[in-house]
Structures are given as C-alpha cells and as structure tokens.
Image 1 (cartoon, rainbow, N blue to C red):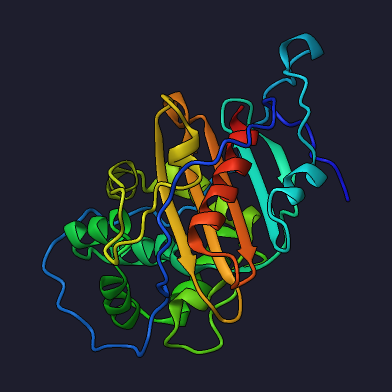
Image 2 (image 1 turned 45 degrees about the horizontal axis):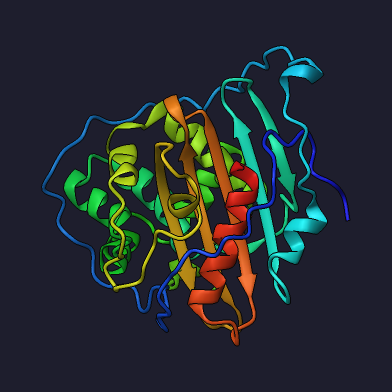
Length: 286
C-alpha cells in the first residue's frame, strides 16, 4: 500500500458523528422529457482551467509532520474502499493522494457537471442551485434529459481533462457515471476559476438533509469544525454496494479542495458508512 504524499495535517480522529440510517437509492430512473428554460445567467468562458502555478515548497519546519497513511485510511473503511485527494490552492499542490485513480459510481457528484452544462447554456439558475444544495434528483433528471444526457459527461471530461471519468452504461442513469477522486478535484479547480457564482453559492448553502430526506452533512461538514466549507455530497445503494462520497472546499478563501470517495458493502448501513467517511475526513483535516 503506498503512502500519502506530503500530507498537510495531522492526527487520526475517529470520533463518530451521528447520522441517520436512510435506505434510499440516489440515482436517476428513466430520462424524463426536457424542461423549459426560463432564467438566464451569463454564459461561462470556454477557456480551460489554467494549470496552477506551484509555489515554493515550505521548509520541513513549516510543514506539519503527518501520522496519517494510506493503510490507516483503508482501515477506517473495513470491507470497503476509500480514495482521498486534497489540493492546497495556496501552494498549488496536491498534499494528499490515496488511491486517486480508483473509479467509483459517482452518485450525485455528477450533478456538478450537469450544473456546468445548464449554466453554460443560460439555464435556470435558481433550479440549478436547488439541484445542488438539496441534491434534488428530479431536477437532475430533467436537466440530464434537456442538456444532452451522457454527452454532458463526455464533453466535460474532454474539456477538463478528466481522464478517468466515463458516462453511465445505461444512458438514463446519470448517477452511474464513473468518476475518480483525482477527477473530482479537477472539476472543483475549474469551478473555482471559471464558474464560482451559482455553483459555489449552492454548495455553501447545502442543506442538512437532501430532497429525499437523507442527512448529507457527513464527511466534510461534520469534520470541518468552525472552518468554512462548501460541499457536494453523493450517496447510492445497492448495485451491489453502497457509495458515500463527500467533496468540496474547506478553509478561508476556499484554500483546500477535498474529495473523499468511498464504497461499502450493502450490509453496512448508511449511519455506519457516514461515520466512517467523517472519520476519514477528520483524519485529513486534523
């Protein structure tokens, strides 16, 4: 098992945060009819996100000595899999990389790409914000049908260089898009550079419970403490396993982009899986 490269914070904090067990599936069904577009937002630039300029590496004295390693994170998800990537925007460098190229079912993380497509084509801003902040599946299904379906994924994957991202095999099931933690971080880099408005507004306003009643404050929100955050979460079950993902930005000036993707046996309930994901993020944040 390879170790994390240059992890920026310390400690394994295994305090489990309470979460409710909800037995819901978070994916799309059949593709509905397109919806009417009524609201307008300024079209975003087609310019690809620039490659961050690396800043000088801090001296050993200024960098925390981490005790977290890949094997330690793996042990937090017994019987399952976990991937984590943290990007420090101030340093312009990845500070955590664990199984960064391992692919997972995206669940609602693909809504970030759906939102980009809708906003780029002057779609309804308020509905995009609701889709993201409440993780509204019905709106996601409507947008998926109206703005290109699987081509949403292939187009943005090519534009942003998402080398491991693939559209779903079943064109109607947007939640079955395949994605990696590394690619999720790239999506956030683009959003922060080119489309921060409605998307970040929605992610900062993420509600404690999604539109389906699921508690979506596991992971980053529960682990961040008093640090500011903006998140897009994902959960799905059980084809055949349970997915639980937390992603977003943490810290002043959105300094850290954090992506933690996880897969659990279907026998592990959502409450337990949520606690495990929160423990992983707590270990990363300190």
